[in-house]
Image (cartoon, rainbow, N blue to C red; front, side, top):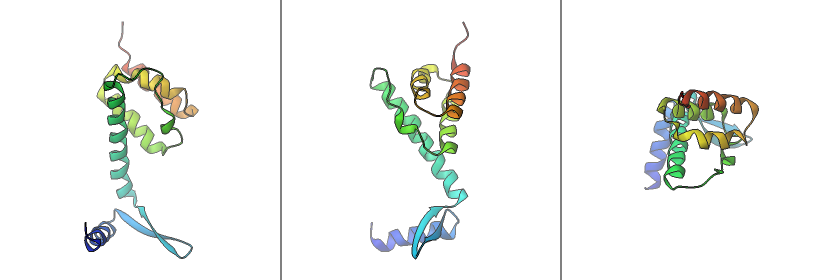
Length: 122
């Protein structure tokens, strides 16, 4: 893509409130606005869930490597868990169990809630 087109797209996202410019010292830095972050957060959460699906489809054996989710943006992580819960699919339980071994207490508590709601009643 030509540089002019990239710059035009960046300008568009700033004008429409998806990105904003902040300064770190003398350097301008592009950051998401709240509206832009909401879109990006949802896209990232979808990408993580698709990664879960890929891990499960590849027949990868446990334990699942879930350390990459630790210390990520909490809002985004909670959105991932909401998406897993909304799927209603208990295939995610092994991933969730392994994830709960590596994350902080608050995320472990939410993971336990999701597992509990996905676990079929006997």
